[in-house]
Length: 486
Image (cartoon, rainbow, N blue to C red; front, top):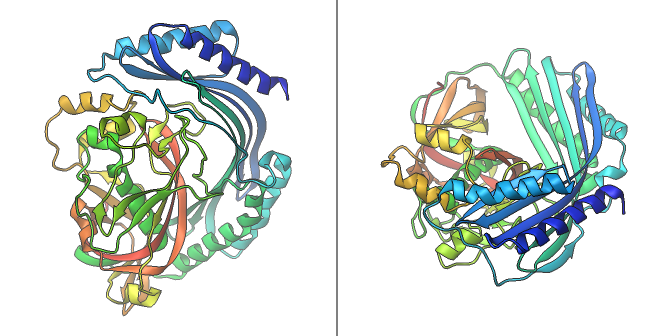
């Protein structure tokens, strides 16, 4: 074991002992982490940056004075650790949270999970990783591109998490991802994200990622601009666009979003026709997969929507205790550990239907391949989603008490980043400058689910925490309003 690994474990043990002896601390979780990271950028001019480094750190979440506080530091000397511990304990008093935060004081877990990688990502040199990206970009050589930008990044993570009630879990995770942007000389920008926790095996998938992106860019480049209809329109969504939409919807099925008064949905509500089934699970090797969450809970599947009705919300231990239900491991750690874990979906699995690709598009006027980032109609929701939020989920209720009713919460505009006008189910030119208006009732207009499914991956920001997400979904058809993009 290297010194860096030992330093992280010793820091974790020191902090746990320190919190166990502090009468002001009701409960604490501490994680010692060791990371080996790679980050590389490749453009149309060739490799621009390549960095490989190791990092040891420790994160801590304390429950004191009825509130939770979160910290992460790479300074592991006792003086720095004591400073972080004191700040965390004082954080609860300064927050002055009205409802006391709760925690799981009775369930104890002891486990080791070695991840899903046969070969860790750190077993391959950074030069080999850059070479794999360059080889994959050969698929774009025939395209008329103004700019190519690719970011490859991976982390080999060894983490030991313990808490003051006796749980200890050791996990290993090899997470790699690539973000690709192809700017057409005469057309839109094609963006793709792909990721996995299968370790070095992900490098073998890069060629397919770039070939798919190049094919989509080629189709857009060859399509003339067509006039896009506005007003209520029948729209077909690709698996990718549908995945983006269902990921967006899943935020309203997070318990803390409801506590803030920002969710239009509650358990038992019908949000879509029969046939919409959504499960949040943990697929081995998925970009968003973890065996245990930040609260040392095993990550288990949970059905959130069944036959179009909300069956269950996503919880951490605090919100689950409030609602007298059980957590399923949805306290998702922030990538990099710099911000607190958040209640979030891991890998959404949307059930397929019986419509083939031709049937899905047959009655539609517009086909959306990919959406851009949604714009929230309600200003309060825009601010709260992007703003800093404490590590205690029950503080969300304090936010809700200070605000008025917000009828526009749950509504957003989705700019169509890659889309086509359809005639008799065939592409008849690309559409530019339009957006789809999403309102909570839009899902009720779903009229077809595709037979084929694909997985969409990405990184989502929730209250400054950057969280991985994955959605396996079929293409769908629905009715929605299209308008000129703002």
